[in-house]
Length: 297
Image: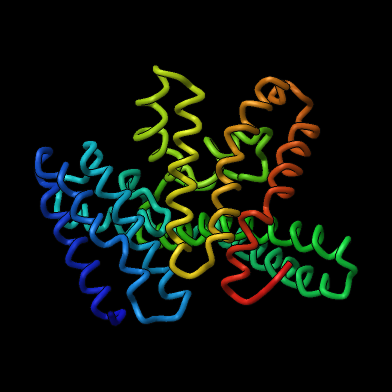
């Protein structure tokens, strides 16, 4: 199948999902319209990055369709179309508020700082190639973690800068993840709050009354499945297993840190705990991605 055909299929489903969500009863059928699209990345003749982007588009259409089915949907057809596109760009269009048009100096400053930090991260990654493995891997993991946090900051700041120029404002999606004092805080309050809201609403809250542990493991299990789907068409099974392991380890760590009462530790010690653990596990998430690009730690 050509990528053009796949885009047409996706676009048709996007329009259909947005159209039928006009009523609550019809909206419940939206997710079922997206399910037949799930195998598309395996059948499209396109480079790996294009197939991954297609998987992202299908996944975000499904997440949006579930939101519509659960009652979180804009009133207008155009609003629902925009909701899905904004979701894929990590923008919660339902949080839009009108403001006076202005130049967001703070966002511009943050973009400049983030670009400089990204440059340092890339330099650190490249320079690490001259180090022995015992130093190269930790250096590259630290550089990769920094680049991921920089990407989150760039997303926030670019959205803030552009939206201010168009007289609107959206809620931030990444709330300074580097300030996290626990792994639980990182995932629930600071990293991708749009995704966290989706999982909390559709998975955690419905299951919490039965068991917090069940809700937590189900949440991260579904998160692992979705993330594996994004790369499943372009990487071997062993890389998929590694990425799944990264997410499936998170509920164990969250339960462990609650027993250790990490939230009561001094702030510095709590942050060291949080980012030491996350960086130590980063190869599980990073290796599949860089392998698809032909790179290595």
